[in-house]
Image 1 (cartoon, rainbow, N blue to C red):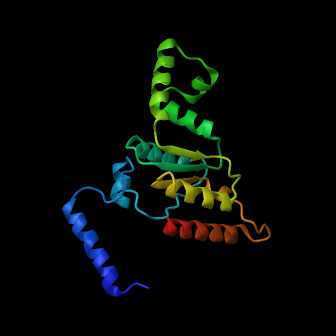
Image 2 (cartoon, rainbow, N blue to C red):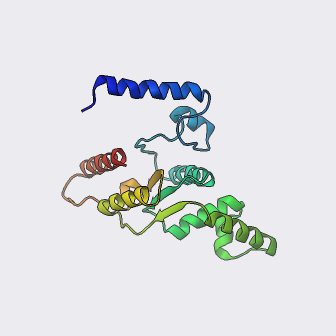
Image 3 (cartoon, rainbow, N blue to C red):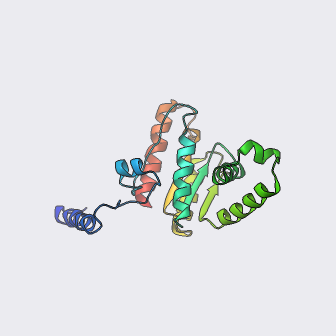
Length: 192
């Protein structure tokens, strides 16, 4: 139990820090100015990004993660929809401005191949930890998240695609399952 005094001291300290760093964001830079204005950077919060299919949720998450890891901020990424290799292919395509289809087909010239190799090597040094083998099991996501934060120093975790997380009770209605899953993830966020 915290007293009003303890909480108020924390608030005052945050305000003094904000005045000290006036104009800069208090969280981790997303790489998107408008999003930083709304969120004040990525804070220690649980954020759900929702939109209809094929609107760019994964693209936004990947780009935010990429902006963080470029600044050497360790990021954990649970990819429940695509393999880690597919995710890396997507990032490499974006980083080199070479279409993913061309990368997959191998229709590359010597100059493009050199660029891809150089950029791929640079990217291999990024502090990005991808987990694509959880099969949507919440217990695995929780245990791997704890490991990533406590052992690997991860500062931000993305779960792409939260709706693919499986609930142990299949008889529950899906919205009830997702509500419980969301509560578990929020509790994990507070813990970590």
